[in-house]
Image (cartoon, rainbow, N blue to C red; front, side, top):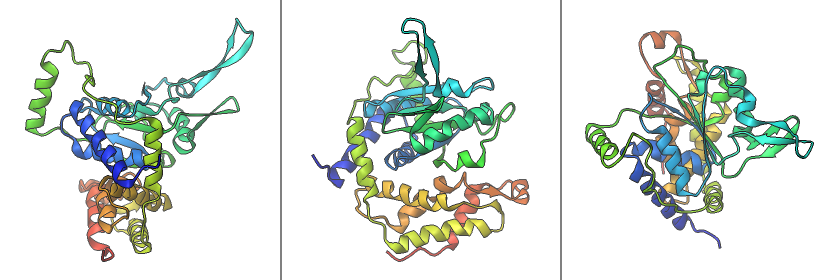
Length: 321
């Protein structure tokens, strides 16, 4: 049965509602995570511990009956701990593959910057090609697939910064901040009422669709129309980052591609069959903030990449709708 755009958008709104049953507040974070999922991308979530990142991923997996795995990245984590390895089975007298935690729908790579580059790069192939090579043999991961990596912005001791090549593989970099006063009060009330310990409670989250149906929505997303003037606008924004005073590194072409992919998902969520310049504007900061680097002078003056991107968005003229 073919799914309509209206039906797809309704299902996505229902997913958002279900996640909100478990996760109080953080509506922007939920929205941006769904944008990445619909666009078939990966996300890097930056925020201090205890803000609900694991709860978000677990709840999201539950909404489409997906598999969920979590890897706690540590300095001694090896690539084979992530991807898997061949092992000798004494019963069959043969080597069998033992698949690692990447063989899932949603992978939470917790504190990814705690592991050295060699281990971080074990995720590159699966993030880009949705497959894993073990001892020369290639194995596909279940679809839909998404890596959600987290890093703590404050604690830098004993961390390894992510290489540019890996950062570029993330469709969005999402910032998760402390909850508002009313939200924090509601969280405390929820977690301390009729519950022993502080385990993640996702019992109220219902399954809305299946992995196959989610893939149908992702396919609809790819067919949303984008006018050439909107593509031109996205490219002009990205090219501006390469020569903007205050940035030492600008975004590569993957930034433009990611902008269009994310904007299509944004349009689908809002039940539109075409992308508008506003879709590009609204999603540009999470798409580009990890693809640019501040100049040393800007860092000294405590500017952020978000500040610079806002200035670029204000100065580059958008096409008339």
